[in-house]
Image 1 (cartoon, rainbow, N blue to C red):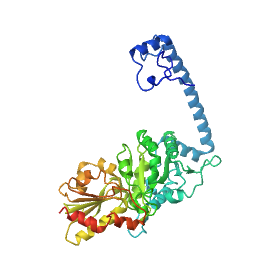
Image 2 (cartoon, rainbow, N blue to C red):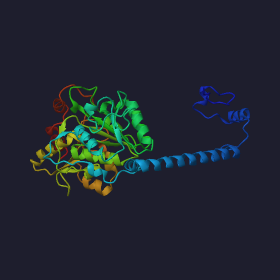
Image 3 (spheres, helix red, strand yellow):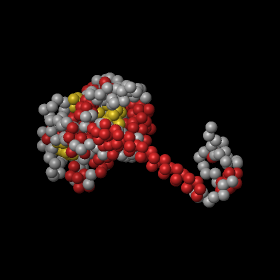
Image 4 (cartoon, one colour):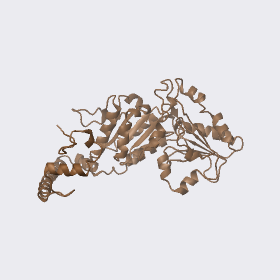
Length: 419
């Protein structure tokens, strides 16, 4: 057993030793009790020497044995050995990003959770270290790598992990995979609302600089009839507030591909991908490269100062574009900005940020089916943030959007009220 405060005559095995220093008098008493006559932080030379000699010798022997095994393995299995060396190097395979598909408006619009599955299956052959799965929601999260089976004791070569209904454990396992140093790229998935069960593990990812990819589907009231128990509200804001976490909410296939491009490359920063249940059209100006900038002009002229700027994320980007077209019909010059990742946009040079959100245009409306918390820094003191600062409801997604003001008429009115 472990005795807390061992050696302290007056505080051992008490709460006093748990959360506060012993104090000068008790330190002196403990030194006397343990017969420890060395100065603070002084390691006796014989102890240091023994540890150094034994550790170096054991380490050198272990390293030599590992290298010998590796050489024997490489002689017998050269291709597999090359792959293993690439993995443990920590470097990503050359050209891996080229595996990500791109889309045009002519391609069928689908939910970004389905685009996510497309990305995972495109990346799986290019990234031998990609491994992950879902908390018993794979058919809904769309996280199966179809060319692989389930990772089990008897099938260690497979790469789909059945984590079970235990989100915190799932996140902790992924942290372990990422920290192991073997080049694995872990991902895990659940409904975005259930990130509440995994938040501590996700925070450890950010704190420990582990590039876990968190695939969070059913990202808003757009999921519909499951109701407020399943509809995320404050979740986007909470992860945007977390240091060293990329929070993505892509609007189409190209932005989903861009989110994966950043998430895979970011081995010291975890990424949360908030993905839609409902289908979304592919946009003409979306791209992987634009997504890497965090925000960009997705509709309207990029030069000059517009009469109004509409900022959207995810499923609200098409709504912003429709509202912009309505305002253009009234003779207004309108710019729509897609902002899939606040953190990436905030990292861009000031000149780029100004080119996307020129200070001269103060007529701004943000539209996002979630908490409005934090949007003030982009819409300004006189702008309008259209969002949801209450719990949702059980109804079809389209009905909820209408009920809660995610409509062209409301976006147009919110812009015109500032003109």
